[in-house]
Length: 378
Image (cartoon, rainbow, N blue to C red; front, top):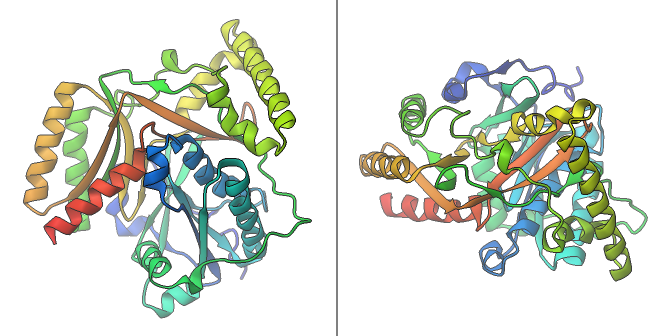
């Protein structure tokens, strides 16, 4: 039986705190493949102010693979400076070619080095490492994958240990990279409270997740009250610095970039006009964006972005540190005054996905703090 629609056919859950419930997960078939991408020396490049470009490459990795076969639904995780993507065998060759082209785009457009690797689920199973998938549907317009099992972490370890899992193919000069739907046209989004956090959390005992997440929610509020995107602060950008990230991959030449920059400003002006005067479906466009943001996810580790007040921050850090000392959890935080958003638009007034992170290093810096605490506790 063909397994390429296995993810599409999974039922979804709506309660994020159920992520540790083993009954909601299904093992990924052995004839699927796992791809991983990450930006080399991401911390150094973040210090150079290139985090928007780094975020774009994570999103680019995902959209390039999704566009290989639009009849499929694929599970993936956006991690700020990279991504994990799972594909069935029939999409493997196309996904591999696409990611090689993205690696070249990273060099040409942003001067960044993107590492890519792949492994079959059959090979992971031979190491006695598995990957299980569930679907989480927080809103009517948005579904995303929940991923558990040791497979992701183990593959990340293999990539660092042995470059035989790295993809070193040369780019096919005749291959046309399809990035349709990838956009980055919004200004940095000011926090509606005092801070916006990129937050990483792991409970060594999975049974603790539900209690810990419920306790955190009591401190920071529910998903609506802590949402990092405020409709009133969601503003289209007309600044070259913001729009150049998109203009740079649309054309290689300086003239082409200038023309694309002009085109993006015109498009943004038109969008601003349509939203301001509430013309047609544009009246609710910002609400659609907010309802399709990727602000909480699980890939054997919880990743969240949320707004928080100073008072809530004090209580949250006190709670997290207490439970960290009790070895109930390990965490990492990155604070910022702004969020940044990278968008995948499949239908202008239909299917969207919006990846949200914080501006000054986001998940990448939170992960660094998490790993430091993990080393200390061990």
